Length: 154
Image (cartoon, rainbow, N blue to C red):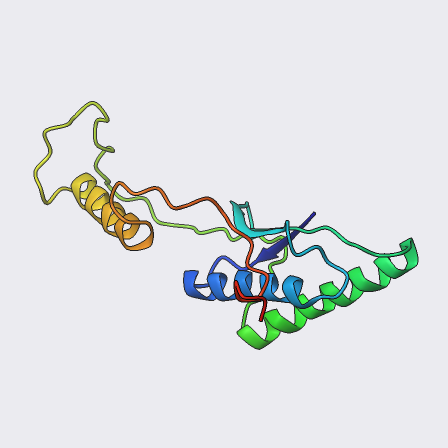
């Protein structure tokens, strides 16, 4: 199990490409199990987006496993560079803002907001995103493992 920390300004499409690229490295690697592995954006950390890499090794000995882990991690670094994904380092940014008169946040109990309110806008945007990625009211199927081979073995 590894966590790769990438920069917060990485676009979602780039994250998808990077995760799928790592999955393909796993599928192509001669010493990794192909039947069970996970590579997903897993956490929004304090200073980075965290990608979980959960893989299993099939090696004859510890020395071979260490060598192959080394090779795998270097391949992931090469992939990140090729795709323009930057690894994040623990940093903090302090934003200073002059005091302004800002209205208080909306009352969470308030449900009769107008259609053009920020809350309604947020809900509509979220619905559009979910509909585009998973469909309305449709559960995606369980995760299957693509081994790179067709059903006919080719």
